[in-house]
Image (cartoon, rainbow, N blue to C red; front, side, top):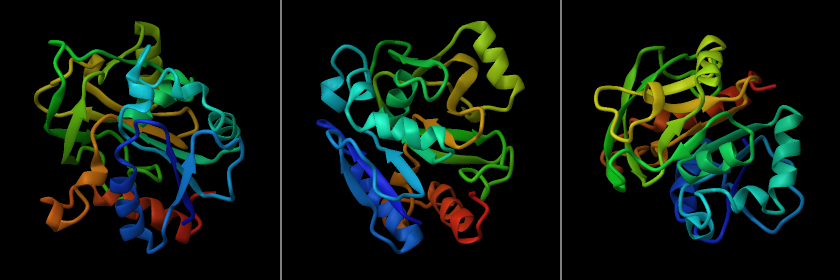
Length: 226
């Protein structure tokens, strides 16, 4: 699997993401600088966590207009696979590649703790190695992770199966309907707030996030991601 990781000023989870992708695929991902205006030949583009451009204006708002986002939009429009985690999820919503928005956490506090996520469907390349209803642990580290959308949008994404993950148990950041991650309409773009890449090895304290990355690699190896 040929993966590229987009790096913006303030990104700080690109190395964590590279470890997860390399461990799953055996192949080193390519680092992509935000000022690039082309993409190499890739199977997957990843927007990792951090604080792109210092989270000025709104989290992800400036990054959504970076030169590289034009090629990323084109890649997604051609049916390419895109994963955004934490700040990457924020960027994808600001770029209108995913519905909704990420607002300040309920309680106005930065959250740095583990949470539990429930898998809503398993017929996607991102979730194929879980069963629908499975619950796994993932670290969260964000100040603006409160997923929000108007009622019509929430009803639409629920009805069309675009909810990827929900917070199980306590909804720490106040997200609407406990939504922790969503898909695009074609299920090829996925964004989520918690960090599965930080639990992919026993040395990290667990492997709860490993199924996401193993599933992606298996999809491309088996030709399912076409």
